[in-house]
Image (cartoon, rainbow over the protein chains, first blue to last red):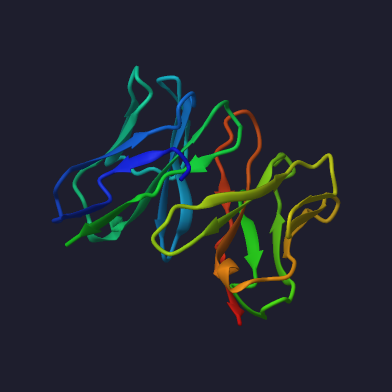
Length: 112
Length: 112
């Protein structure tokens, strides 16, 4: 158990809908990273927050957004969902910027 | 320039044998090279990591070998066990943000 929690574990929704994925980092970790894992693209970095501020962006679509709250939990919002958004979404946390990253169990999103 | 190339895609090893997975990178700004192990339905788990100031790091049965001039690094699993059967990902990061660039993964199967 990495200490990173993610909810929900599974999410099934329809095209065009909007969902919110939640992540709680390990106790004491200030940095949160979001990654998407799909069969064709592998593990890809989406976005990073540090102590409430956005610090880096990767291959994140404009339909996706995220935020980190004062209690350090983070939410990833996915809107106007398409079939191709079906994937595993992982959150990772680290104590400091550039530190070891510990991954949560993931949220499996299925868009029908 | 941001890619990390991993090989082989899949690997079958007999119990007690040595498993070797290789990765190569282009971006000389990368300064942190972790390996992750992922079991089906689980999040990636940090296995071992290295920075370029050393050429080798060993933790139990797992060893990372790093060749800075060739921009290559590899994971060696000694005395491979059936419980090691999983997908292994190499990754790299550089700079202060620390977001990881992952290889495509190697599915390891250790036969009893």
